[in-house]
Image (tube, rainbow, N blue to C red; front, side, top):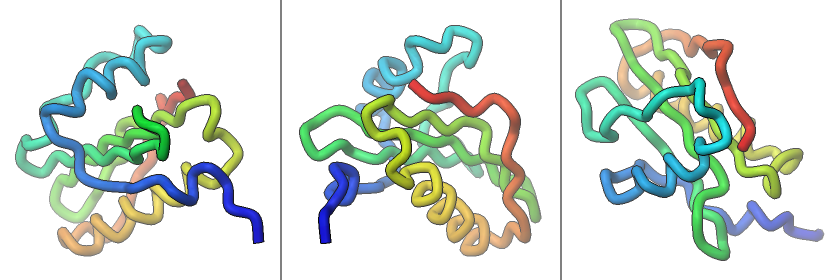
Length: 113
């Protein structure tokens, strides 16, 4: 079985130290705006570390009561088509369940970097 480069990526909660790398991933999409601080209440930012450094992807989830909203999902070009989106969304769905949200809404302005 052949591993894709992203099979070695680590998905984790972002920290404030990740903000420059997140902004770099989003740099080609000026209309997106800025990511909120990862430690804001009911606001979650996850990142997927690339095996060779930098970010393979990042996503922003806001949980409001029984609804989780995926407000941003960015995947680096070199990781497109490798199932990264599905992997990240699966984790976000599990987070929604863990925090009591019954559904995950995906907003329209998702980006590929």
